[in-house]
Each structure stands twice: as structure tokens, then as C-alpha cells.
Length: 326
Image (cartoon, rainbow, N blue to C red; front, side, top):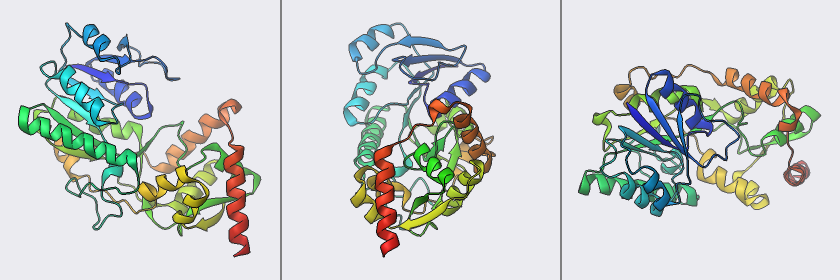
């Protein structure tokens, strides 16, 4: 099978690229070459910016692929470009959407692929919804061979699961309070990128998946209190948790707030029965306590990775002072 990844060196796509090659598929990466992660060994690499549609069209003029996955599409105009570029050049086009597109707050759990798409809080999610709508229309009207994939919170060893990244770990290790939104009991799902890869790669070239959408997540459910506690144990620290409503956090830090209100503040429980029907070997098996140890080992291996955000640290101090007074 000949596979093209647009991107392919990101947190999620890097694990998928490795698995594609392990399964003896022929992988081509179309990438700007700007990532800190090197391309997967064995992949053919075209260094082009997908935004340069004319240059990409010329580079791929004599190429055809069984499957194309675009990891870096975020707006409808980018989707329109891909429909034009890959119509007739691939038998399967996979668009990477986002589980944040699902209804917020959800009216019914667990989330299935038929849960409405609606997010009034986050423009990123609304853009993904618009992309999906355009691609499904292309499938209905022109038989464009699309499948939609909606990752949720997918991580590798480089990605700490909370706003502020290492700044929050630094606060834990110094004995300073850390901020958890709400009362910390909303449910969340964290998916290791190697588990996700099994589902994604299993869909490649599957003609039965055309016109369908799938989310691909772990089945492990954790509260945010548990997530902070697991990360604290991996960092050999005891987190001192202060609970702050998401709406209040948004007043202190708009970026943090929209990420909460548009996604993480809501309990998200996913039904993965659909991806299992299409990809029977999908069976996520990496618990977050194992992933947390991988994360902290990566950060502790090189102190230069432990970058701090002094402004965010100050904002957290101000929130803590406010709630201590209350």
C-alpha cells in the first residue's frame, strides 16, 4: 500500500508513520521539515509546504496513493485545496478532525460518532466542523473518498496534559499550589499516541470506511484530580490542588479558558465500539500512569526541556491568592 502523510512528524502522526512502516507499507511524507522530530526512518520525504498548492501539485504530478492523511488541515479553504489536489490521485483521503467538535456540553454520554457537532466556545472546533461538512458534501456529491478521524487528547512523551506544561510540574516540585478547573471530578480520556496509531493505520485503504467518521481514544477514564495526582507521583511530588471554576480561569487567562470551556471542562466519555468493528485489533493498552512515567523521564533527561512560563506562574499565584482569601 502506498500512503502519503501531509505532516507526519507531529505527536500523533509520528507514531502512525512508524506503524505504517512496520506494516511494510510504502510511506511518503510531505513536510516543511520544521519539526524537532526527524522523519520516520524508511519514509520517502518531499520537502514542500502544503500551502503552496502549485508547488505541491507539481511535486506530486506523477504520484498516486492508496491513502492520503492530512494532519495539518484546519480551515475550509485548506480542505478545498486538498479536494482539488487529490481527486483522482487517491482511493482514500483521511481528514484529521477533533473530538472537541462534539456537542459542548454533551447532552448524553457516552459520546458516539452520531453525537451532534456543536461547540459555541472554541473557533478551532467550529472550523473543524465546517471542514467535515465540506468533505462529507464532497463525498455525497462527487464521491470524494473521505473518512473523518476525530482524536481526543492524544499524547506522547513530550506532552504534559495540562495548561502551562512544565510550569505546572515546577510548581508541584516546589510545593506551590496548582490550579485544577471545577471541582476536579469531571472525567477525561488520555490516549497514548501508539494506541491511537493502531486505529488510524487500521483504517488506511479500508473502502468500507468511506463516508464514515470515527473517534479513536483510550477506554481509561480519569478525573482531573487523578490526572494531576498521577503526574505528581511520576514527578515525585505531592500536588497541592486548588479548585477554580473554569469561567474564573477564563477571566484570568483567555487562552486557558477557551481550552477548558470548549473542551476539557466537560466530562467526555467515548464509546469506541465503531472503530473496533472496523479495526478489530484496536485495543488501547497503555495506561496513563505508564505514559506519565514516560513523560517525566523525557523531561528529566534534559533540563533544557523544562521551560517555564513566568507570566503564567504569576497568573496562577494571583488565582491562588484570590481563592485563599475567599
